[in-house]
Image (cartoon, rainbow, N blue to C red; front, side, top):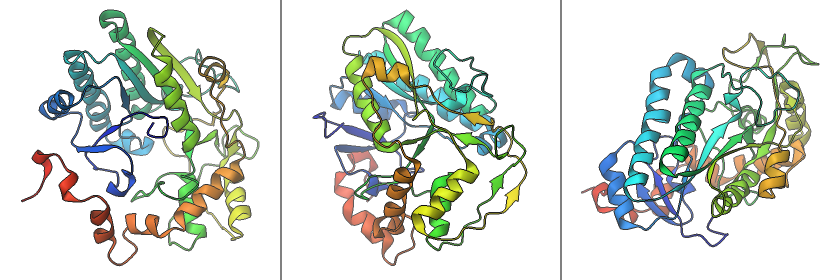
Length: 335
């Protein structure tokens, strides 16, 4: 958004993120479930639109703690939409997910595929899509839901990327293990109805997703109502194929043990993104899984990533010096 010429304000409570990732725009520390914080923020800036990324997003955790997911992902979004109405901000781009579809009924999943989520995470996202659809009809909201398939990779210049603790995503877990970290990585299930028995996913690079958000916001300048778009490369890779691709990119041998299936996982999720390509003009640049993995390897081998994960001496100092206390809104400063 910054590179496209937009003035950006990032609202993040950093509950699962890193201050070092906030490289562009103005940074407001707070949560969208805090009504007074949002009102203060919307009073301070004249927003043209909202890009809503904030959510809990771990499938297995959502199976264990569904109420936490409904509160954070659905109730907090209702709060955000209510404040948007108060301040007459009528454009929102929502980060949705392929998990809204559940077990696929077609090899390529289009936007009109039935939505039968297998887990509370996917259901929470589908609930928000319905809230947006109803809000468009009732209040004149303009909304786009971007249904990500498997977001992967990192900034090609290794400025930002994934750094979770614990890490739950396949590619960063494999890359970090290949780079020497002592991480537990397993193949969850080898009895799925796929060629090699492991789950198949469509991996889409984060830079390509970022470009889709710019295009979606521009789309809302002239499009009314609610619009949903699937974002993926249209090519599926099994878990075993991803393991092999990481081996090839890193040159490291990976002996990954096998365990049973993970609850809530569909066997095959591959996007048809023809609608996003034709309507938004979206064209992903990272179409080879090896190229996606190469950016992840570059990021996970960087000192910045190590600092975020706390594996370098002075990591806390490095983060704080980049994102100092003086940049926080007054109500979030210490002392």
